Length: 150
View: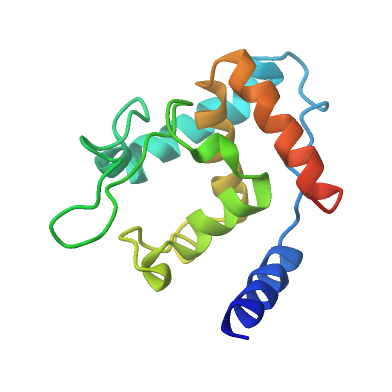
């Protein structure tokens, strides 16, 4: 019963988010992974100012990110394609940044009160621009399936 309730709450939160990434086709020139270079550049600046202190300057994550720290919380994972962020659809990435992970026992602060939805999108586009092409293609498939109901 508890797991069913949790599933319904998560489904409701995800339904409230736009499950699709921002329109990449509107970009006049494509950057890495076909992403809009201007948005990637804006995302890089927002990332450096707000995220790099925990996730690393290049999105490399914290040392020993695969093991919980002494406080029982997981250190910040890499966002550069070498961690697990690419296993999650767009809506999950955006929701995690917006709400943080503290309610789930993690250490990430909620950024929804500080970053706009566009800022969050641009940060995601920046770290996706660092992913190898094959990782980005695999993520695109995951995201497409999630948008189609799994």
